[in-house]
Amino acid sequence: MRTAIAELATLGSTGARRGFVAACATLLSLPLAAQWPSFEAKRAPRQADGTVELKAPAPVAADGHPDLSGLWERFGPGGITPDVEALRSTDGGPPAATFWNVGAGIAGGLPFTPLAAIVRQERMADNQKNNPDALCLPMGLMQLHLHPQPRKIVQTPGLVVIMYEGNEGLRQIFTDGRALPTVDENLQPWWYGYSVGRWEGDTLVVETVGFRDDVWLDVQGSPLTGAGKMTERFRRLDYGALQVDITIEDPMAYTRPFRVRVNQRLFPDAELIEFICNENEKSSQHYDP
Amino acid sequence: MKTIWILPIVAAGAVLVSGAAAAHHSFAAEFDRNLPVTVTGTVTNVEWMNPHARFYIDVKGEDGKTVNWDFELASPNGLMRRGWNRNSMKIGDTVTVTGSRAKNNPLVGNASTVTLADGKRLFAGSSAENEPTQTPPSQ
Image (cartoon, rainbow over all chains, first blue to last red):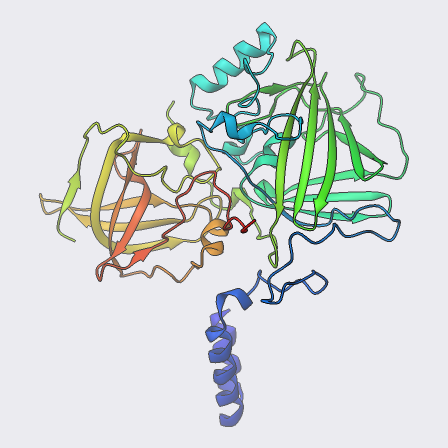
């Protein structure tokens, strides 16, 4: 690219060359906020100081449903040892999950079956080096919900697409009335499963089945298997807040269903950044055997 | 540039914030917090690539031999959101790096701080593993 630019500069007349150099200088001097991938969202409600009015009402799509579209970022307590009290919901909803442990806020922890407890213990014992994320493989949907890197929701009539920056996760949620596939031996298990959604009032209810047996719900390796079903209830509380309450049912891994919450906030005037995990993956060369 | 301190001091709790491990892998899968490292050297290469930006520095040891260290940073997307880019560190820069050593390689580390010869910090703010990328909105 530098060669091509040099050629362009050489080919042009002196005046053009000066113009080119001036243009480059202008580009280079732009403030960071004006550079790709930051941009100013045209239709966002704004305060007097120009910042996005995050407390404005949730936008409404052409079909009258709330529009969940936007770039979203998980927020709230996290880390390996979160403040459990802070994970509690104040509205009677489920406790917040964390990227490390989706059950961090559940009294007594996740209700593992004996088999799942062993699987999780093994995954922890080797420092989670086989976490699909650490191997540049797709993360489970809960990991994607909770990942520190943002995700972009694009809502269209009949289809909601979620593009996760983390490991370039891509998910389709069909809202065109189709039924979930039958989970049997003929259904190809998928990393992200098969998702359909429907509106219940202002809540998008998404059901997903057809997972692989080796899904990790979190960095600590809480399992999800092909017997699992995930039900998500998406609510855009206002312009800047998205709440997702999630129920996991998986009789292979958990003795009873459990519910957790994921809180997302709008990441205003920003865009996804390409993340191709395998372009220079060298960490695994140093994983402790 | 001429000094190399490798301090295998067990200093639980005193060690550097989580390194720039970001979320790609568990820190403990690759690095040992009990093997803190501080080295000063000259940048020989920068790989501004996923899943982790990396840089390499030549460090001269007390025995006069020069070795090439390989340091891992956060992922480029996280670094970019904090205002850093692929030209923030240049080949030939003299930097002092603190971090943690890889468990299975004495010349690989996770960089938690990178300081230029004039004292300027590079990649500051990028080491918060599993932290959101924007400042909480005032509410």
